[in-house]
Length: 324
Length: 275
Image (cartoon, rainbow over all chains, first blue to last red; front, side, top):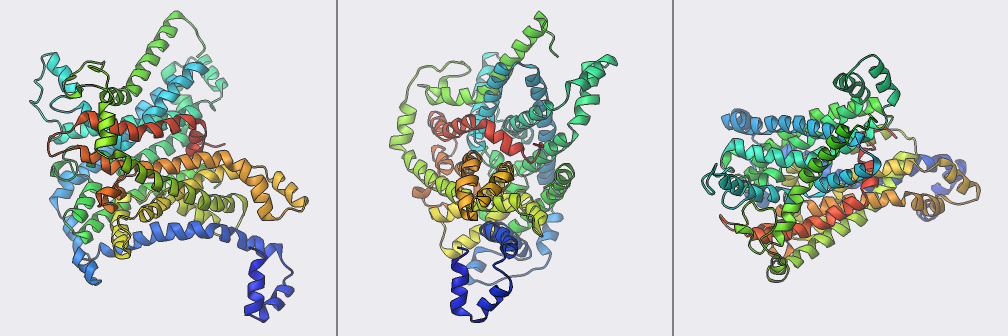
């Protein structure tokens, strides 16, 4: 490629060969250009598929845009009307935002707690058992969100699922007497279980990697000073692993804020039970069920803005810890 | 930490059993439902009421699930090839060259991973509709390329950076061109990273749901995830078939994960954990 390019230029442009002679077939020039040539395909893909659509969604959020606008190819700007409508809607403040933020916070706390406990436990095991347990955790991690959700829906199936059958067997509840998916709290309890189950392996594996780097001397010194296991955890482990913990918390927060599949695929989660909607599902159904792409975009922009704030915190943390 | 009293050994053994049971149970429940002769009347019994492969047969033969598997495979393999190639070039650029705006490029690669798919699905759907790319395997592959690329670059960057610079310089001293060095030195050494990255791209495409649901409206172009929904009717679900189909979806992913877990964990945590 590097030999073909100057040839082409020679033929098209008489001045080019002179220029090239003036700057000797410079390694410097090529080294300056090389990274950009290598990056070009990636930047084009990211630009076309991620950045441009973000611009477009921002643009759409300022319009009352339906499929007919697309077919006619016109725009229909309404200023900030969509934002005013969404932000003044009690549905946002009473249902959607608590469902999104509250659910994310609970999931992050539980995922971190379970992940950390599992990592601490794995760290006490010998190599063989540790790798057996890690493999089992990998299985939990690998089960796709989609199928994992169906497994939990099946476990909690109101007619013949495992949980209701067990409760029926114990004489506590009759099968078919209650539908957990129609109640907001039990719906989200099941979703939490699903998300924590799917999310804790990452935390456990990452924390375990971190734990193995903590020098034993620190624990020995603390033990000599009379610190118990609890104190050692908070005074030695947590401060040493602070950067890793920070990254885990922020990544989990980002993931748990944009949970979509795990809600959407639960019975009633696709928008048919309005009181279990979160921001992602609301945006999706507003667009694709109601055909109001403008309003859907507005909700999507709000969700993205929320995530961007967290992302900036994440990247700042990362930049502090590591030279990129 | 290394005390070995009978009590701690027993506690550890109980811990291992509890951990294994809880982590593997949902997976076990899926598998055992898929082979159960009558999953709906099984109740809370831990063992299936009888063993059968009829659910798999129903799913693959009668319900045509193989068609969905084929669509998903084509899309996922296309994504793997495209994103591996594009990401490798970009990873070399950010790991090997110091240039202006390099940090900005890396920050952008990190930032775009945070963009929620729900925000992208609206503009990309409208764009694909305008271009006539709905119900097109190529259209879906291109979209997945976009989603898997940022992580692939980030992941490969660590593997490229781990190749000692001296090896490259030695190749140049021997008169190799950059391309020759790339082919003979860098590519073989980065191969394990490329495998891990490919697995991750494959899983991204194989598991994706929102775009597959929105883009593929023609029943013959359903991916496995969207095809799974055909086993649900208004108020009932054929759980034996759903779990058999779920097994078909989950099994390759789980096998991949377990096979490359070492590489994968290293790659995923490379951004989080030093070294």
